[in-house]
Amino acid sequence: MRPNPVYKPREDSHLLASAVEKYAFGRALDMGTGSGFLAMIAAKKKEVVSVLAVDVNTGALEYARKKNIHPKITYMQSDLFSNIKGKFDTIIFNPPYLPEDKKLKDVALDGGRMGYEVLVDFLKKAKGYLKDDGQILFLFSTLTKKEVIDRTLIENAYLSEEAEKRKLDFEELFVCRIKKLESLANGIRSPEFLAKGKRGLIYTFAYRGKKAAIKIKNPKSESPARIFIEGNNLKQVNRLGIGPRLLRATDKYLIYEFVEGTLLPEFIEEAGKKDILNAILQVFLQMRTLDINRINKEEMTNPRKHIIVTPEKKVVLIDFERAHKTPRPHNVTQFCQYVASDKMQTLLKNKGIIISKKQLFFLAKEYKRDYDEDAYRKITEEIIKKP
Image 1: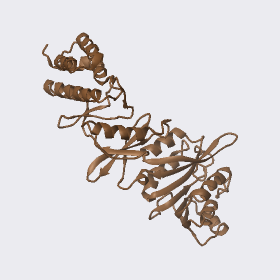
Image 2 (image 1 turned 90 degrees about the vertical axis):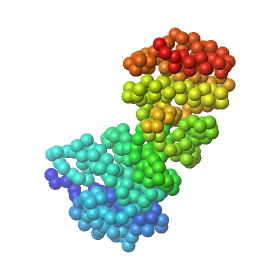
Image 3 (image 1 turned 180 degrees about the vertical axis):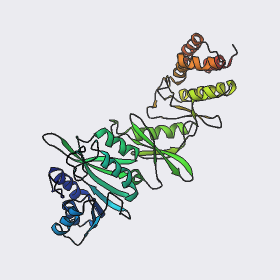
Image 4 (image 1 turned 45 degrees about the vertical axis):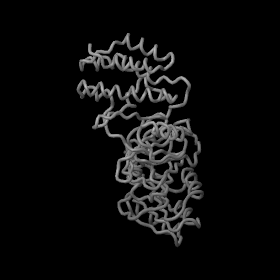
């Protein structure tokens, strides 16, 4: 049987229409317009200036032109963005999201072999047609792999929020409202995904002629104030000459100079004995400075991703989201534990550096009593003494 060439409005269409009525503005693009239902919803809003309604299916376009007529709407044939020019304030997309049915092909329903390929392709291309302060409203289902969509949004530097949802008998529908990361602030241009942590997402971009990093909240994090706290932490440690230089901070993001370099374990594998000892002593000096100022960085018992050695062999500590003030910090003692760990001991021995684990633990215990300068000096002497 030949499939219907037009996708008539159903539960998903009405759910997305609710978001369109709330949020659509400016120059709008209705991708995969089908019957033109969503294009008409958008066109009726006074905040919407014009609507370009496109579809790959010429039969659907012919139907839409006759069914949904409005002076703001222009219809055009296009396979996703193949014939589209310019940028839009609002892009609307109710994508096909069912896994491909080889027996009954229907572009209005088939989202690709796994059901999400069309939407992923759309999201990768859409940024080039969206204004910096624009938005995309799109729908997907639990039948579409949510983890794939979430990953695509992160890797393509989209900020997302759930606008609507509805539970049906065999699936749950979600309407997602997304914006470009560039919408957060002036000066952010073409950010590239770098890393994902439990609490934050990091992107890099060019900022005032230099490479910078921007950190935003991970949507899955349950610590809403963590970005604001880390910004304050960076301000404090920057005054002590520690950490990457903070350039801008709000409760939604922080921007800092990107630190080019090598993580400490990899640096130890590549560098000579003198440079390795110098790097370790630089870390200890920064640990001591934090201790004196009663700031505890945390995570220094396993700081593999927290210590970067630059090409100039300068050590920079990164990631201060868990740092906090305390009367008894343990930065030096935690780093002693790390240096004494089996992995570090093996790395150092391979470079001819022998540090007594037993003696280091003893000295760390002595230091912990009252954070005495002489006790700290003995730790550094143990590091550099010849075997």
